[in-house]
Length: 470
Image (cartoon, rainbow, N blue to C red; front, side, top):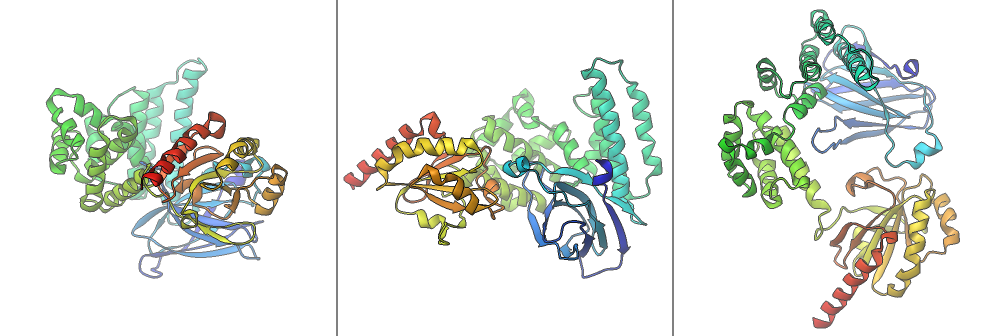
């Protein structure tokens, strides 16, 4: 398998192409007519990753792409069953030779949450960033696995100090500054794990405050481990207990920042902001602080945070927690029905709507639709059932469902790359219930097999009573 997924990246030249652009050229054996998707590095808070470009591989199995990059950028290239991780520098041009294209299996195609096989770039030439990072990670995971195996399998414990000394020697062989910083964060993490430290040493705290590198996985993962639950701990500390009141009331922001920095572990303001976002996002869903106060902080930071990355992240979080909140309008879409008619969210206005996401090849989808069919016909004057099918082929999916004789509106979701993320779908099938003004009532709704009928009928009755009163 390792031989299959090894990817070589050969640097062509390092002269400036066009300002801050980088040029990607590549060869994708067996991939003629297939697509390559290039994503940004996902943020460590929400896991969101932007689709930068989606291009088709030409008949001669080559591709070419120009991308904007400021200084150093991390990218993830999805192709076949692989997700290729690499670092690029502005003004450089790269040529990639991808693994031979491997078609997804039927099970992989049916899985809407399919996980790509991650692999790092192996770089030949004078630009060593990717090579050195790959070498660091290869030993980092190797030593980590040795330590884990000894505990899980009950084998004699490894000599952890010896492994740490061996890992520390990597630094002597590194020639690239960025890779050197990457190594320092990995080494700090390994020391914490091997020595069972709850917090890193003072020199590691200084290291975290020295640079703010939110795109670098080694840095941001270490930050996540060190500061997991940090705000809750401060809020429970008698010396910083006023922090809870400030967060619950949504500010003032400068008081929150000052209390965090006075605690001593964080001095860098950009890192302080990121730790706030990381912690408050988790606490928003676990109930550690009052939601309205946390929402106010997110909104304020989306406009006023010192660091641009944190402003964008706060804006993304604000959008994410609001887009599927009951009472709000869900994300729009533009999809076709079997006759080629275009449906958007606004097309559903005027009736209550059950919006379902399913896959015709999954028996659970047909099972739940069969239950819906038994009672939704009674309310067809006020209730519409719209089923977005996520199958790879829309015509085939309709054929599989034909025997069900459903009186529903079916829409083709096969070409949409955003639906799962926009609606934060965690399982298939999923259901959402909207009122006649396209406001979410149940988000997500329970399944029909869990007695969705009672919840829907109650809402329909309340809506009818409102209409009568009006």
